Length: 287
Image (cartoon, rainbow, N blue to C red; front, side, top):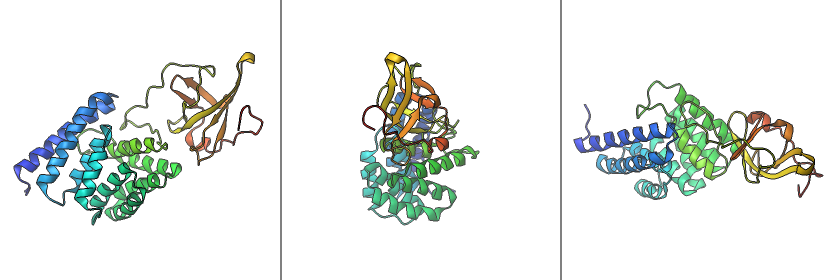
């Protein structure tokens, strides 16, 4: 029999219900509509934490996740750190602290908290791996870790809100995007990749355009287009530093699958793209 008082239970149930509503909207690519129920869920999780006592860390985690997906998280992260006192004595408390630290950009604390998560079993260990990779700004390690999290969610028969969504991965992807290392994964349990807009050509390709592998992972952005429009020659482009191990890479025009208004898709998957060469010294402009 539950030992929770009715008020605690009511707040938690309302939080989960609002979160479920928002999760359905996110999967339908209705991000703007999802923001309000996510904000409400975050507030309900906070209130349920205050009513439940000092060991219900899942409510702090729920608050932080909902806040991040609503496009915020800063005030909630500060609140969570204040409630935890900067310390954690269980895997769940460590996850709450690690997530708050990532939101605030405190990579050292996130890394330390991740160590405490590893004692909580496989699911906590997978998430700890992603947290540490984010703290280290390690693109390749992060991509592998978040893929493992998505695979775990895809194998589950039951989801907390009743909506089949890999919300942990989605939250981490939002944080990774701010750091420029989002994996851009595709899964039935994640929102569809962002609409890349109408098809274009090398003539419309602009610097700063996102570059995606064939499996959906974002590799970086276009730094320099290499072309001779007068002769209708498209040699390719330079993929900016910060992607693929922090080195600039040359992408030959022949391996470009499609150019869109808001993105470039390659014929290579993410693993193959890691073998792209560095720019030639004789390319136009400054290599």
